[in-house]
Length: 471
Image (tube, rainbow, N blue to C red):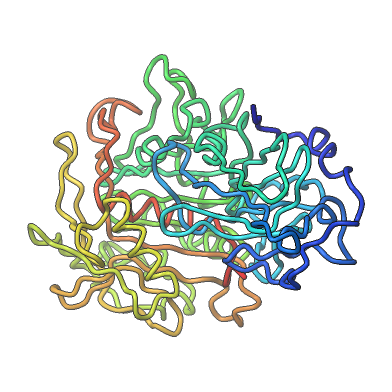
């Protein structure tokens, strides 16, 4: 029976075995590409990279490991997750935001690596054989380390879904440190539960035993856990201003998710916070903002007649044309289109949405749906984005082409190779409303995901990945 091993001392058993006598003899051993090509065999091999048997020389199939990567809920397959066999023990992650560039490559000297496809499937061809073979499944600081008790020569080892599901809690593997601000018109704190994150990991930043997801209260959003909640019974959330007006505090987090508050509320986003949030992203942080959090990119518009003058850095202000004070609610039965032409991940995103029920027609995402009586709607607050500065994910073909979702890397005024952070903006909302009860009662009881929630789920895990092309 296979077992999860997250302690390097356990994994060392596998890495210490074998000599360098067996190699993958086809010569294709340096790519590390999507096809699962080997990167560790040959005369310069190290560790278990020296245990790759030349099966083809014996007219046998290659030694292979395959499986499917799932979100922590165990049911949603994930695209673009790195899967590899490391030659050296996995190193501990640095705490908090870091500059993670794809050009730096994967850590731990991968013997062979690949990424999961639009169906979440992966296949590593030409893997080391023997006892205690390690396998790493990771995206950013989401990481699960598995030890396979035995991989037989020239056969396929199929991993179970339980083994290749990203961790729900820290006992199952590594998780990024996430901050979520609640909101009166959106509830990203509800999405994380649907994605399967353990309630014990959802806490406040002041909890006696803080989890990996911290909730902060912003305008009209939830402010307290219900009595008996596993993450913190009756605990009150810290105010969002204490997060985004404190750069050192933000740097403690890998990811910031900002739920729509129903308005810009510039009174709790002073210019100092505007500047600090940009500095956080430039440093290597990841920001996921919905709807009225356009203030960070557009500046204060909704209430400018009341004397608010907050403005983003000019480099952020130049990424798009906003609708300013008229972010219209979408018409009934509205739909959005996935951009496959200009987004490098557009085709994979479209494949994934179609495979997972987010689209019933390719490239189409229906935006007016209800789950458990809760409306999950969208808005249009962005007219166009600069294609030289942003990646457009989803747009509205029937409503003037307005952009629904886009992403950019930052510092945006630096060359691509010097960028460290990511900012994702979405006009889509999730189905929880924060309007009734305390958390998590405010999320309702349904675990079903609307099409736009599935789109946001795709981006939820994608934003955690490195900056730049995967390989």
